Length: 81
Image: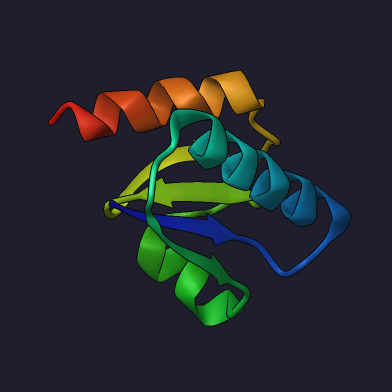
């Protein structure tokens, strides 16, 4: 599973990254992780509003900080595919 946090590095992006890391830890999920800070890649990934979270190429959150529980739910759904 590849997880990308998309955002320029603002406090909201850092909080989103922290929540993703915590969700992965709680699920004991070993995922490929990347924080995309290159503005040119945001649109390529389909993220119009930051922070964004992309899982295996699909935008699952955009424009808000998802909670750890929301992220865990999204990751569990993707892991079941």
